[in-house]
Image 1 (cartoon, rainbow, N blue to C red):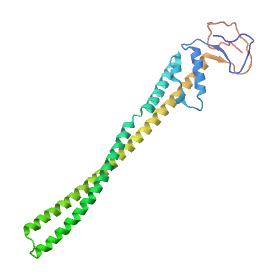
Image 2 (image 1 turned 135 degrees about the horizontal axis):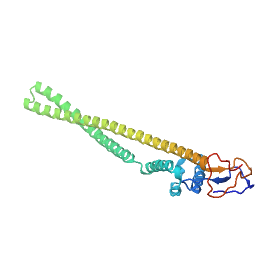
Image 3 (image 1 turned 90 degrees about the vertical axis):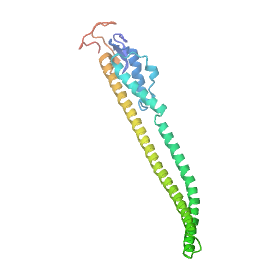
Image 4 (image 1 turned 90 degrees about the horizontal axis):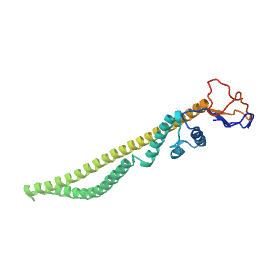
Length: 239
């Protein structure tokens, strides 16, 4: 395809001629315009739906790889695959902390019961020495004291277990956060690398098939040129 005539004034960067390839050159030129427009913005703003129907020939494989990477990155951002892990961790933390608060209140009550029971047990021991109470009554008071002691110990153990559980949940949540950040970085990095590969493929295609004016001036045909004309590698076509 020839876009200029012999001795026509042309501007710098103007497309003069395109050689036949497996791509639709108009799609490649539009893709180049899109890629250049994203300078400073990043691949995240790439309009995948607009380019989906482009016929890109030799560039197609690199574009498909980039489009898949960008789609994966966008799906990751939208679906938030680690969100259920974070939500479960938050629920677990809230439930465990609430149980600890309740148990701490209960522990205060059991602590009071324990102290009262211990005083009674100490008193009964003195009364037994004085032969005021029987051995049977002493044993009953001892059982009450041991039960109060066991109740307090059970609550302390449960609180300790819940505190360990909270540490485990926080560790799991931290691990999920690290994994989420790593996945995000990897996906973004992969998209960026494939975007640069797409840019290189565009450069290579333009170098092989697209003739543009390096400077402003007047174009001169070096031989008779026409649409769909066959040319060989190394032929001098324009100056």
